[in-house]
Amino acid sequence: MIDTKLVLVVSALIFSIGLYGVLSRRNAIGILMCVELMLNASNLNLVAFARLHPIPLGQTFALFVIALAAAAVVVGLAIVILVYRQLEDVNVDRFNLMKW
Image (cartoon, rainbow, N blue to C red):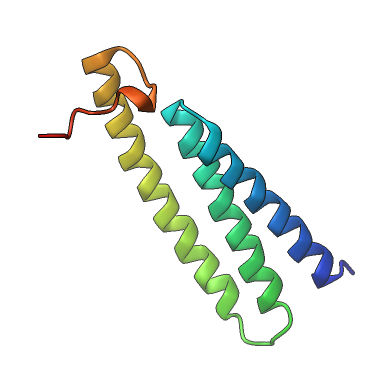
C-alpha cells in the first residue's frame, strides 16, 4: 500500500509546480494548464485524506472539483480564443481589453 504521507508530499509538489507556472508564465494557455495542475493536486489531496476515513466524502468532492474545473477550462479557453481573434496574441501582458 502507498503511504498517505507520500501522496500528500507528491500533491504538495504538484501544487507547487502549478503555482510556480501560474506566477511565471505569460502565455494564457500555459496559465490555464498550470491552474488545472493545481486543481488536480487538490483532488489528490482530497482523495488522500478521504483514505484515512471510511466516509467517501473526499472522492465526492474530488468529482465535483473535476466537473467544475472542466467547465472553467471551457470558459477560459473561449475567452482566450476571443482575445486571440482580436489581438492575434495570447500574451497576458496585452490583455487590457476589459479595462475602461
